Length: 314
Image (cartoon, rainbow, N blue to C red; front, side):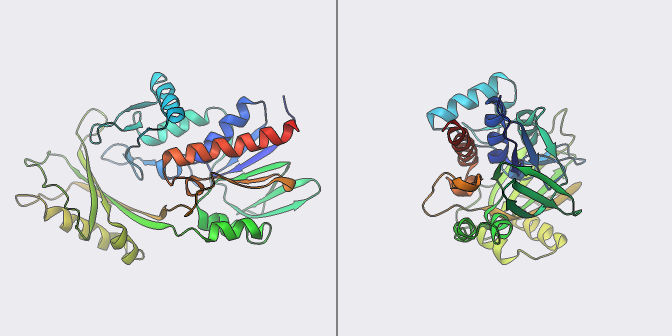
């Protein structure tokens, strides 16, 4: 059992994977997450449509190591096949259930936004939004979107902040529409040149979902152009775009909400897996350090944790 205290900022897939790997190796870990729940862009939301996945609706597993991990999650009933996306997986019964199960009993401080960092001979101290100081910690893993990592590291680790600054994160607008009476007709396939919609995904009405729910993801260009639009404008625009794909008059929806991911997608042009400042015990992880997807986040978190474990062994 190691006595090295480790802090991890961010409870998305990268941060949680690092936390699990380090905990399994005997390290005491604390996770700090500014949201009220885990998952990052694998988050879900309670609504009168049932639980709705706010970000990634499913993910694939092609790499051997990740495929084995996915099989373990399946055997634990933490995953299930995606109905709408063949050969892909989703959290069971919703995305954030996967990350919540992965977190398990790891000490996690939710609704705790770390706004600044300081480092001295005792290690890393974390300063939150209530001016409380957490630490010191001997090792620190920062597993948050690149622009947030850049802001947090600008003063204490400018070299690593510069790497994060190279990543251009793409915003994404998501809209959910719920219908108590399932729609009578199928939608025409979303055309590749649709200027508003990138994807439409159905969640059928069932015991967990009292409404048929359609999740609409806006195109990258539209999301960027309308980043600061208010929610009602976005709802109307995406509903109108969906209506144009429906072969009849689209009925009024019974429930709806919109969610903006300001930092939705993006990765380094030359993926490195993770970034480190070994002498000071600092690692940076996230999908943006790798392949920009769920696998990339998982792999990056693993690599950051292994870096810490290997460093301690020498």
